[in-house]
Length: 513
Image (cartoon, rainbow, N blue to C red; front, side, top):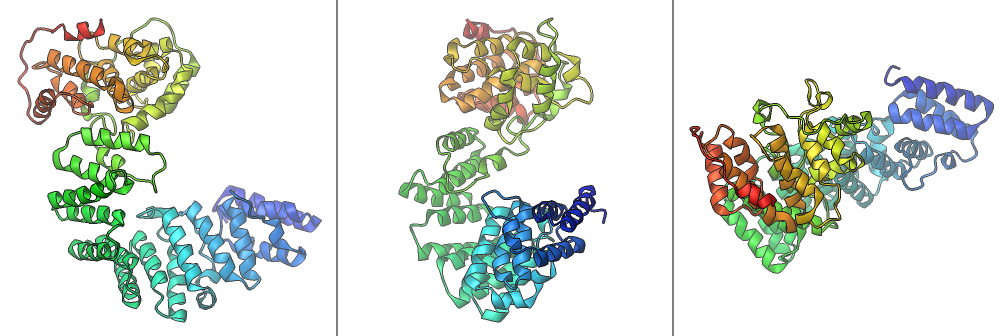
């Protein structure tokens, strides 16, 4: 029993509490042990002893909101032991949804065919659908084995109750999430054959997509539209599937059709921005999507389109590969930052982020570090030395954005501080300051024209120089950058530029004034 060092301790305390007749204490330690070793026989033996000695053992594991998963699982096991496994399974599934990688369902009563005969198919279908929503699509790789017993329950229930369309569809959704595309297709086909419906076609379309059978997926989703032409979420699914087939323009026509019906329907808006960015690479589509996310915090469900579009792109999701090749950061002030300031910066510093607005949010904690300390940290060896998280300069500059945030942007101290860091040659501090300005333009539309002018001016100053590509990469993620600068930046990133001497312009100095 080496699964977790806490388990032995909890079991020892639980036995002692049982011997003393302290049932509440025993229940608390057993719930804690279940969290770390949910299939350990010794825990279940003690649960049986507790149930035999307590007047109502279920009351020892109350199911108030936000109850710990171990307590919920213990309640489920006691229900199963009392001959009510059909009531225990939804609770066990809730624990699995909370921590999918834990083997909550790997116990004999879950895989017993008796459960399949007892449980109501509609109840099981709802349970499986809630589980699917909780674990994501696809489920984490670590969850594939722990969640597999629920597929066994679906098999037994279908065998006992016949072809139940809703259960087969929900089972298909779970099978797809667990990397079982053939099973997902089989169940979805059987469910749709049993009772044709829009939802059945959607499940079938998703199953085909998981197996890479994109044309068949598209056909199923088109049939789903015919069932309900007003369900715009299916339009988004059709568009995404067409894009997977390489039919991008046709996909965009589907999003346009849906947006004509409802220009604020979240699934379609997310899909449309993602596909438009895929079509032309213009960051304006991602900025528009970020604006929509900010202005519509109550979307129907969580979307990942912005994260996916930004993934693995320089500055959109993390530091560019060439940052470490730039000259080392230069100290900006002679004051010594406090140990607390160093600790706070190192806690947020990392080389990647989901997208620029997420980086802005992550730096919020640095509002507790004084601006002069953030400036001192830009060149401090304790945060920029070897072995430290990358991009400390970036996070220090992002932290400056949160100071004086109530001030109008153009006259703000945070703008002046960041513009002051742009003097001199291109180095890591210059890039960090530019990225902070650009990030603020992502989150505040009122700052975009100003930031775009600053970036365009800096790009013009370094054109033809040895570090022009470094600024070009930043220019490509700048909101509302003028078209000619953006096209030149794109060409710079694609084609190496032969260095040549160029005089420094006065545009940046004029903007600073």
